[in-house]
Image 1 (cartoon, rainbow, N blue to C red):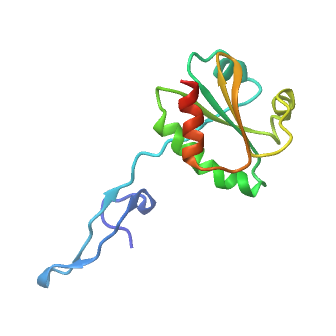
Image 2 (image 1 turned 60 degrees about the vertical axis):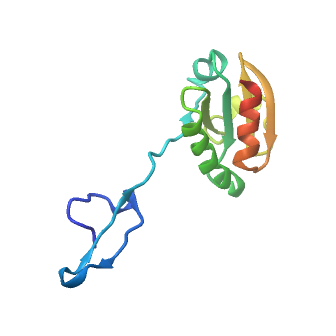
Length: 141
């Protein structure tokens, strides 16, 4: 059951069904935090987004079939929101953009590269925590 005036219940959390006397159940809805997503980086936009950026750039080299990549994906999306305006955070699918992955010697995924002024300044191979990735981005600032 979706409360009146709510188009998508998935946009809300914390539904609280409380009885209020004889009036019946009411709903308390709290809007979720605005969700940010990492940029989709491709061979066509790699040069502009990553190499020419005046901000640090975190690139997540991933694939849809990769379990650890799917674990890191939401963390990368969170970082995109946390670092909005301070750094660029993006994802590059190695299945569709293999040439870029090959250019940087990415052989295992997930691989997360931090770029600054077009140069790799840090690297993480394998799944890791948000704190580790945030520290890598902070170190590139």
